[in-house]
Image (cartoon, helix red, strand yellow):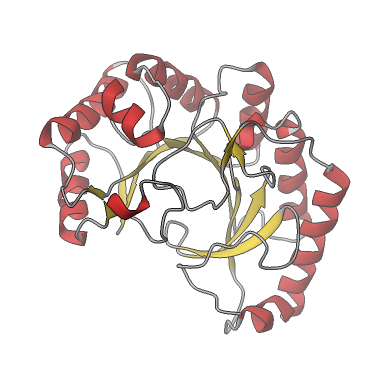
Length: 280
């Protein structure tokens, strides 16, 4: 099977919840934990690569099945068979990413999933070698069970990657297809960062051949500035372009910004005193 940063198929191993990807943001092999095999999400980002995306929440998670799948993958990592299957010289797990085909924190079993993944990572001897990451749109962070999960994530040295693609309500609605209040988003970010190290991640792209308006770029940077002014302790910011084609109706309208444009945006964010990672 072809295996590259362009291929993030969730069924690469024929499993329901566990899938390997070569991740630009992780810098190598990432083991994804898909809590949304129903392809249901409460957002609909216009750049989303999930084919058949639908509105909704995660289904009930079979924790025993998830444990079995992840344990089997970790055994194949240790034995070297995963690297052979994927056509890699070696399979070094850079991180375990709780993510998937929708918003993972919509799963009722989210705290139990975090504990389970952390324990299997420890049992495999990867606790100090592989990161533990939650990729989230942050919309459920006000829920007690999600906050409980973030505390567990923090206890195991994990990190939250909190999606914030734009700074104004109008641009957020255009990009994420949901009505979002930037001030409320800041409060959710503050809560996340108070419970677990949190990094803002943001996708940037051209729309109808045009780069984002400077007013929108400034609004997003000002949102970050406001977060810092309100005492939000951020681990950093991740900027990335489009590595894979969107499967949303807007796909023909989307394009890739130049690496130099993304790097220049990163430099502007660094001026706020934040650590910035750029993945064109």
